[in-house]
Structure formats: structure tokens, C-alpha cells
Image (tube, rainbow, N blue to C red; front, side, top):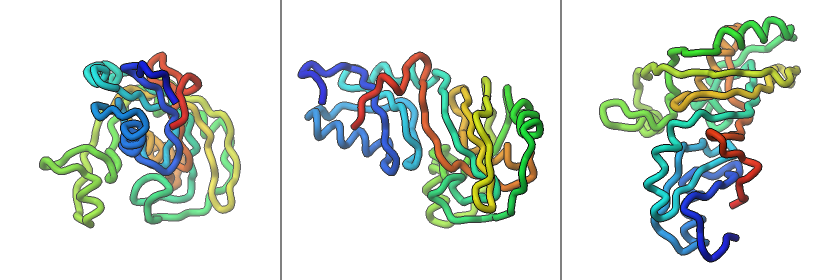
Length: 216
């Protein structure tokens, strides 16, 4: 898959259905190198760009964590789940009627910039030293903390009915520490509907592009 002289930094296009650490495991086995890490986790159902540090490259990963990221996202209006994506159980459903473009654009304009939102219950953010996702999986009731996030820009690519729901196809650039699942739910709230991430692909981290990444 790679030249014998493996780069310290690898760009990988993560497929759907595996964790970011699964990518590390596969690469360790394929390359025979144990010391590896990644900059910026992708949820199992998300696809796209992962930056992998190999050997001495692991020391460079921190510098990539703070870079802005670009995502292509499909948001489904009309359903809310425990995880904020297709993995979770449905918490709320509401039929969605046609939405005019100008109403959607106005909401998208309102979420640009810095915004304080609850982090997803299924996230690695720690409360009392424990990751939230572990507490959520155990069924523990936990008050989800809020966090400042930042949307640099967002663009509406398309929108259409999908059964009883409604799909918004967006592209957005966000600062480090921003959860797209939180942004999706906030867009839903402002439009008057429950919402969840239907599809998510990370296309850029700083100047690194998914087009330059390799399949695992």
C-alpha cells in the first residue's frame, strides 16, 4: 500500500462503519509499525480525512488538532436520536413540510460565528473524569456540558423532502472542538424540528484534502 519508507504523516480516507482507532489497528497490522496515532476522531458512521502520525510523526499530531476542518453533511430534519446520528435510538419524530430556501438560509446565517451549545451525550468529552459516551452507554443520566463552538462559514448545497423528513445538504468549515452533531440539532431547533446528522464526510483539515488521502 505504501513505499517501504513510510511517511511520518499519512492521510487516510476513513470508510463508513469503522472507528478511527480501527484505522490505526489496520495500519499497524499492514505496515508492521506499532507507534501510531491520529489527529481528530471521526465517528464510526462518518467518512473522510484522518491524519495519522507514524513513529516520530506522532509528536506532530498536536499541531493538526487545532486546524479548522471542512465537512460535507446531510442533516435529516424530523428525527432526533440519542447519539445525534443514525447509530442511536429515536427520541423524537415530527413530520416536516416543505421549507423555503430563504428560511433555511436565514437560520444558517444565524449559526455562523461563535456559538455555545451542548456537546453530544455520545462524545469523548469528560465529566468527573469519565467520557460522556461511557456514561451514556451505561444508561447513567448526566447533565451534558455546554461548549463554545465556531462555524466559520456554511453553504446550502441542496434541500429536499425525504419521506416524512427533510434533508439539508450543507458544506461547512468549523474551528477545532466543534461538534457537527450539535450544530445539526441547533439548526433543527431554529427551524422548529428535531434533527440529526444523516451523512457526514470530512473533506479538509487545514490545507490537507481528502482527495490526497489513501483508502485503508
